[in-house]
Length: 226
Ligand code: ADP
Ligand code: ADP
Image (tube, rainbow, N blue to C red; front, side):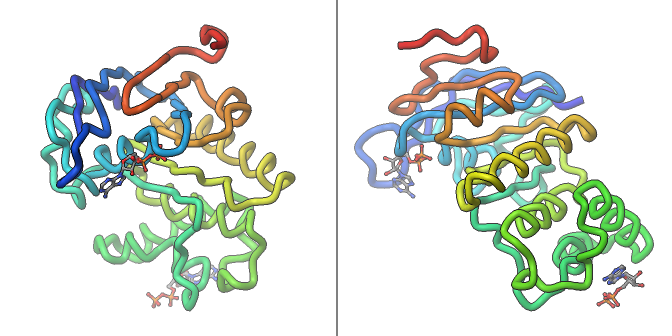
């Protein structure tokens, strides 16, 4: 169970004159896939970074399953992030890219092996485990990034424009991969995109942000045009 609650969340960057996030209130149910959309600069990434702990919250709180989350040290939060630029380790094989964080966390070799192989199978990467990132297509690389996030079995996935570096065709197929993965794992996912069609196609709920506030939040079919 991972129910997320964000209450009266404010973020003001050091030296900034205004709040970047202003009184954000949000509930995300267990297993939900929430897409955040809104124009560039409205605070989407800031909200994700507050969640991950890359940025401190200025005021308000974030909780997961009723437990305070925003004061947990970043490295102890049970999250995994996927970015647009993959951020894979170029000198490591696909296998070791996916295994790396688990090795750091001192998982046993057999546990690492079974998690990596299961992720590879789900993501159609089994035949590519021995390759280096440079020997993969963009879509395969992004699937490795998903695999690396997935093997950690996080409570929450945070995805920041994960498809925006892919060409149109790969974007559609990788989108399907992410939907499929979410169906299988049921992990709560917060997904930032500037692509409204992508959000409509993928998400259970959509959050429309503007100037640091929540403008609308609801199921795709409940949102009104403006
Ligand atoms: P989005 O992801 O929606 O494009 P961001 O969250 O990246 O928006 O940025 C929201 C606002 O916060 C922007 O005005 C941006 O200039 C500002 N901002 C982002 N990061 C910082 C920072 N580290 N310091 C000061 N201001 C920042
Ligand atoms: P380390 O660098 O930590 O010693 P290894 O690369 O030797 O790790 O791999 C450890 C285990 O990971 C191997 O026993 C094997 O089961 C698995 N493994 C590594 N690379 C692959 C691969 N390309 N395909 C399948 N399994 C692999």
